[in-house]
Amino acid sequence: MSARIRSGQPAALVTGIGVAAPNGLGARAWWAAVLRGESGIGPVTRFDADGYPVQVAGEIDGFVDEDHVPARLRPATDRITRLTLAVAAEALADADAAPALSAGNNAGAVTASSAGGVELGQSELQALWSKGRRHVSVYHASAWFPAAGGGQLAIRHQLQGPGGAVVAEQAGGLDAVAQARRELRNGARLMLAGGVDSALCPWAWAAHMAAGTLSTVAEPALAYRPFAPEACGHVLGEGGALLVIEDAETAQARGATGYGTVAGCAATFDGPGVPRLRAAAERALADAGVSPADVDVVFADAAGERGADRAEAEAITALFGPYGVPVTAPKTMTGRLLAGGSSLDLAAALLALRDGVVPPTTATERTADDCPLDLVIGEPRRGGVLRCALVLARGRGGFNSAAVVRGPG
Image (cartoon, rainbow, N blue to C red; front, top):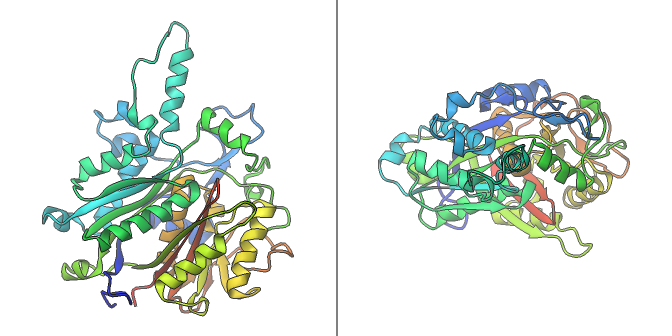
């Protein structure tokens, strides 16, 4: 692989992946579950959801705090931070980044958040209103500031280079990776980037239900069906992915090979009544120096709501034509993971290119007539050569992001 992109800027090589998802803890377990079509969506168990019209979610099962977070940190960290620390450790180990970090390379982290640590906020509200309590006894900074998890990462892994936090809801994971790529161009040698999120508590549940986009279907296998005629909303999940992204020349000098490169990134914002997802995709393709004909698979945002699905299908068909490119949405097995969703799709795209397989979209059995997409349904699609993938993401409020990844060949 060339260590330089067409503009002469350093190539952003992904050398490590860490994952926590409802259908698998760790990148290897999650990817195997995705290729099996195994869903992690089920009834809510993290709190009593019987009184709510929405009762299914993508919950991470089997995560043990004691395995990942020191006892001294647990009282001052929430689930997002604990998951983030575990995912970061996996990504850095996968990249064998310890030598690079110990050598004093300029290394940093950019993470994404949707609303900060809502679960710590929930616990403080409960403390405030519980019998005999007159005030909140402990102020948890990470409950309110989305950068808190990133700060913990920097401290634990001695990431003394550039840092930052991005708030763009579901698009945030891609935006964090784009920022990390810019930091490489500014002289950083290694960046940890992406998003991990969790909002499975009554406070956050009520807020998301108020948006009116959650599915009220009680059957987990039928609740989230993007691009289907029956699509009626999405399922909320928790988790995400962090990627180790390095200057390719530096990585190759230490013997790292990597999964592929983040070749192009772009972001747009919707205008009044004007969706701009297509513009984000076009700009990402231009940034990567590729055309739609070069793209072998699209990882869709897959809102699961009829109007939003139709708008995304229009953006994709405008670029590739009706049924012009394989499209997939493996998030149907996890739910939409807020700030963690798009970085998990980016990880899926890299692994798809590595293995030459397009993961399936589950639950959806057929596409609606107004969504003329070549949606990979039911089973993985194998047999073709995959060199380039486009990942799309939209965040609540008008955020659009797109990224182009290329395989290591």
